[in-house]
Length: 96
Image 1 (cartoon, rainbow, N blue to C red):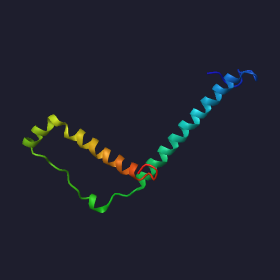
Image 2 (cartoon, rainbow, N blue to C red):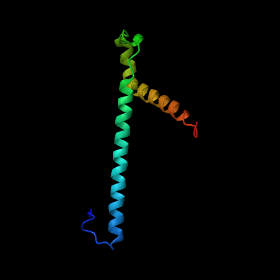
Image 3 (cartoon, rainbow, N blue to C red):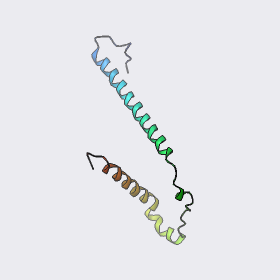
Image 4 (cartoon, rainbow, N blue to C red):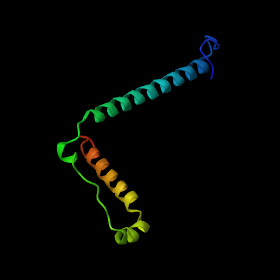
């Protein structure tokens, strides 16, 4: 893209193009900083005490054999994500 130094002062499309590029860069910077702040905030939440002693669940191999074609791990992840997204969307005053 053309830099402002290579554009003439009367070349409006070149200047507008530069302005659009700068606004896009600012939007990306703002989005990146928002995500960094959100991840820092989430990492600052302490783990509850009752979750410190939770053991893993062992599914017997006979049950695992029948559940593997259904991709249970993938499906449960999608369902949990959908419920979390629904909960967040319902908290937005205009939508929920």
